[in-house]
Amino acid sequence: MTELGNVQVQHQRLSKAKIIKRATAIFIGAVLMAVGLEIFLVPNNVIDGGITGISIMLSHITGFRLGIFIFLLNLPFFFMGYKQIGKTFAISTLFGITVLSIFTSLFHPIPAFTEDILLATIFGGMILGTGVGLVIRYGGALDGTEILAILMNKKLPFSVGEIIMFFNIFILGTAGFVYSWDRAMYSILAYVIAFKTIDVVIKGLDESKSAWIISDNSESIGNAIMNRLGRGVTYLSGEGAFSGDDKKVIFCVITRLEEAKLKEIVEENDPNAFLAIADMAEVRGGRFKKRDIH
Image (cartoon, rainbow, N blue to C red; front, side, top):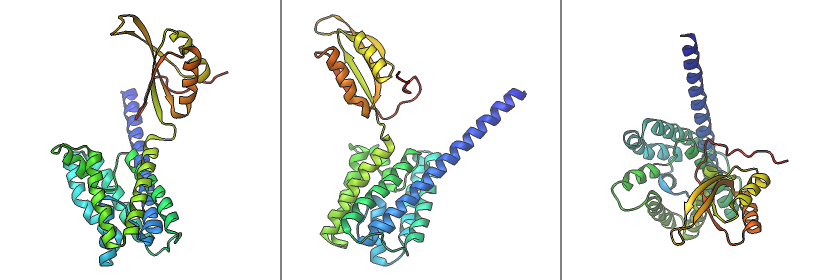
């Protein structure tokens, strides 16, 4: 009974630690997005996509604080997400949007960090993308467009990414009428920078890749990968559909920075080897952690 109680307490503490970690990451991400908006983009009349972009334009037209529109316009999507996507995601999203709304209001009186439109667009997009990527990585969202796209994807023959793109083309194009066409183009640039930054934050700089190698010298290639890269390999049995010959297939997981070295190893051992490398969204468990090479 005592041991079971200890296990339960440990599990409960672990859950609390995860909740605190998630809440902290979402909080930091929302604050970073607020910095990108109110200290870089909005003062220079550059907008973001999605509900945030609509909120920026409404704030500009009406004179009301940006945070009010961000909160009110995203609220319906919170209820949609709660019913359709899940409680944890919805609560994380509501928390992030609330923090974002509060801090955009707090940062509003602060003057723009730079009046150089290009610098504001680049750094504002990077900071905003870092914040959004952090929130997405820890299971939340800062814009209702993603939730709407997920729900519409079930009824429309378009992917989530395509639906979001359609929304943003319309919203960013509208910026040309509200501000000017050069500001609309800067807004598109900020959106592209933010999008790429989100991708880096979610996947990480150490993005993982899977490699499949088919060679008659599979053992020498496998040994070289283990000795020179410090990565484990798995040998799989295969059969050539055309030749009918038995083949030994090497499978391994590497990082983006190790891709060139892997190609070099394969080229040295078998210039005619078949090599396929693909991006991987996530790697867990096993022995992916790199061992020391002496």
